Length: 139
Image 1 (tube, one colour):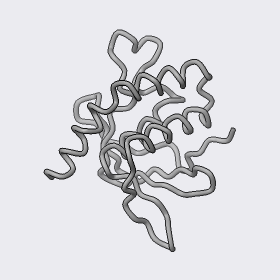
Image 2 (cartoon, one colour):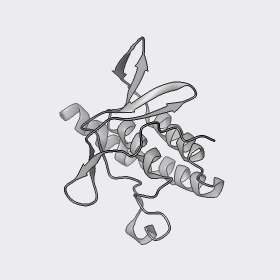
Image 3 (cartoon, rainbow, N blue to C red):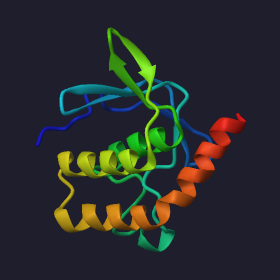
């Protein structure tokens, strides 16, 4: 598959060495539809426990882009190009998780690893989704 991200490398700033803020939008395409992570969006990369960082680092070459798109979905900042303009995408937890799975495959993550990430996310991701959406509505 082709890399879905069209304007890498991403331009991000970090203040704590773990969380990144986008200084330039990051765009990607899925099934012919354009999406964008806008300036100001934040990500912590792939949320994996530190004990697994040796094999699954949060900033892994093949997982970082997909995980940032997933974070943007959970945090309500992901945008979609429709009718000649960018608009906020109001996605569900399930849709965001499926997006991650699709992008992991497109980036060449092997079948075992991408489904391991996906099923752990489906089991535990609701906690982060709920917290992110609560912060979004409070904010």
